[in-house]
Image (cartoon, rainbow, N blue to C red; front, top):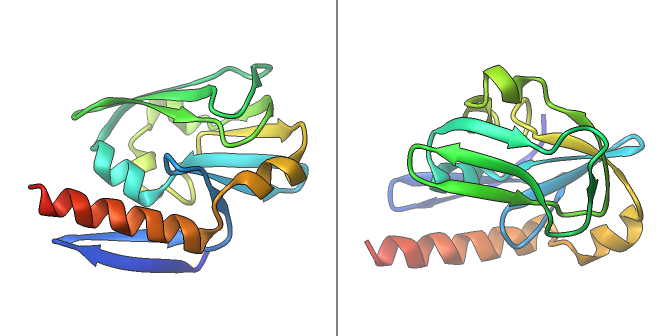
Length: 149
């Protein structure tokens, strides 16, 4: 179970897991053995709404940074999850086909999207935001959005 940094903006509480890196859009990357598991941050999944459908790129797909790793359809928006790393998709979370709502229920655990065999984890992870940096970006964005309501 990861540790979290947490903030409440308006009536919403957002968590950022401290054991992984993030891209600017809120897709996280976590090194698990030889692969990198990716998923949506708590903030991104809350902002997007209840997930109805998740179309993840199939096993064998080569991804570059910012390529669409998945298309997420929610009750509010259609969104894409931009790959935070370069590499090849080696596993798609089987829950995405029949239980995509797990993204909302457990974004840092069971709600992961896919696993990627990274081309160069060291170089790619150095370009990602550390948890504290993403927390700051997310908090600022959430506060600005709350003020505009």
